[in-house]
Length: 296
View 1: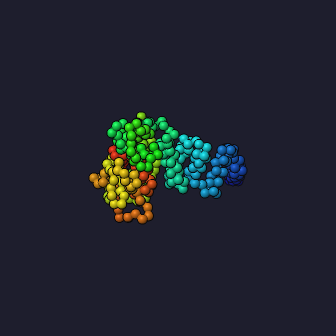
View 2 (view 1 turned 90 degrees about the vertical axis):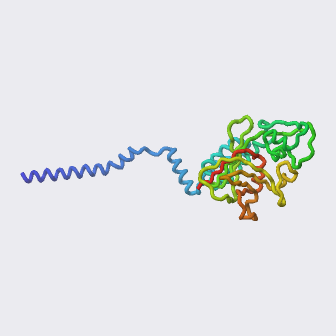
View 3 (view 1 turned 30 degrees about the vertical axis):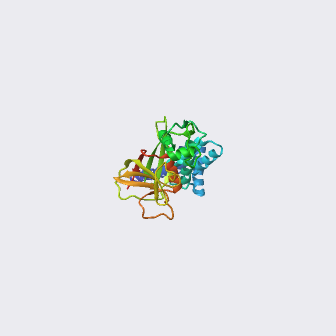
């Protein structure tokens, strides 16, 4: 009986080994059948990922190049969409700063171009009106009035003179973490503010602020020239260095130009390029809303 038991055990071992061997042979074939062959889309995705690794893929580069192509054929709205995609998702990419600059230029062209009269109208000068009263009476700045009408000097006005005017309300978001001043504007008859342009902050010195955002309004606008201070409407205002002021935490904070080389590093304020501040001053007026985001 012991011999028979040994034979049964031997047969059991042989049977187990045969099963294991069969599974070893069948498993690769089973895995091949269980996992379907890669589709064309899978192969394309693998190739795209491999190409990105080989060519040093840059986030936003495809959208940026496509936007340039669209601009070259005059499809500005589609180009704006591509550039907005980069601004929102890839602002820190290599193409981010240039994409935001081009987007701002496109938005300014659309807003200010006299070929687009949808947001503009004609004003005829009435008795007693001057440049500043025409501008303020139509919800715009003196600089904006002169720019739209191709003027550089405050020459004498006559009753019946015609000006292109553009009623506009703007809002500033001063983001000290991202070091950007963002300009939004709302045209007459339009409910929502629209993004116009991002302006890089060159440097800033504003003292200690809380982390929470500050809501304030523009309360000062003037220009400096050779140590003098000139209000809008003064003959020297147009050629001076523009300054925009608002209160933050009970203290006056100034947006100023000349933030690059050669400026006094000890001055307080938020400094932009002079050309950028000139643009801002053309659209921003007293009473406009300002949000300051100090961050950390």
